[in-house]
Image: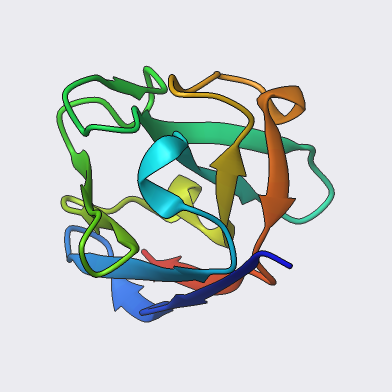
Length: 124
């Protein structure tokens, strides 16, 4: 049974930073890609960032590229999302997800386990 637990969300002013973390358990973490998604109120869940099983390959949504950085520590079974220069439109519930294969996908179909989500609110 895979468990993903996110932490690090909160309220921040526009231009500020937050770091989200996701702790995984239950399946060989290092064999799977990981991703972060977000869901704003009334909207669909969107891809934010993904990272391959080794961490050598990353992908970002155009709206966050250059501001967000995804990283992983396979020894600690964690994946992080460093978010800088936050904007009000970054507000939403952020979900950690474990991929179905080595390389990340930019859509939810490529992931089979999800965390419960952590709220990020950016005030203007």
